[in-house]
Length: 194
Image (cartoon, rainbow, N blue to C red; front, side, top):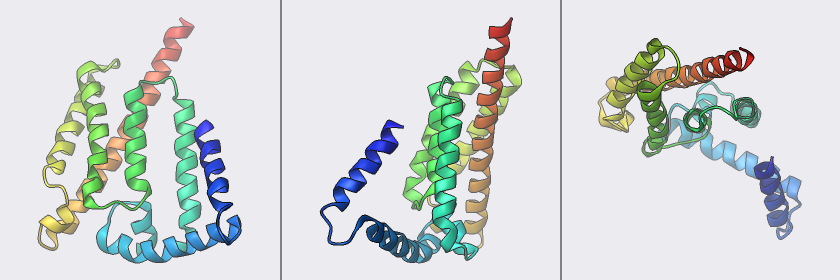
């Protein structure tokens, strides 16, 4: 909450020194962002809300989708605030990667969930099957991080297949970490009750 209030305060402070009022500034910023990102998001980026919105012709819904994604992350983070910090970091990094425009070089964000998967595989508190699944996902994720920028590295149509596979793997990792955090929270609640 402190971060949100600080950001809003900084926005009001910066807006006080502009010729336009704050609402007009925000309105113009949304319009220009939408126009710029609608073109560059499809051409230079992939696997994020900008590129998906532009691809499906839903650019005008981007602010709603963006806000929804951030609110969902905030609610999830609050619900799992007592979970292992690396679970929170892994989910937040993947949501950040899927949320906004990122170039291929920003795939470095995926190293944080890689660390999360390693920690689960090595020190997981749940059944061995979860640790093994984390190890398998770790190996697959690392394999697809060997060639960053697959969109530009491979010839067509292999580049598109590579990016789609990479996106599928990252989504699977996100779902796995969320599921793992849920199972760990459930285990802690059961232990507390007994």
